[in-house]
Length: 104
Image (cartoon, rainbow, N blue to C red):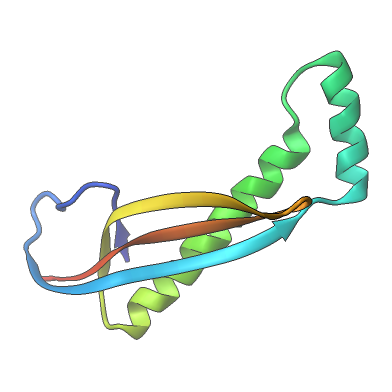
């Protein structure tokens, strides 16, 4: 599956536009990670526990978007984007979405 943030794929021709494809996941913070993040907040620096958690959430959202695209018989996704929103105090949704297309 080709995934791109651009509207076109160089060297490929879009022969059919399937439409919106998406995948999401909701992740909650972990108490142990919160303790480490709190300590990092005091001394400064990257909060690597959250960086890793959000990277995993993005990968899972992409995989679910690909599954949605395949169900709709797309073989590529163009104009792919991420959106993140807070669901409740300790949980956030990561949404991956784009336009499913069929390439020649």
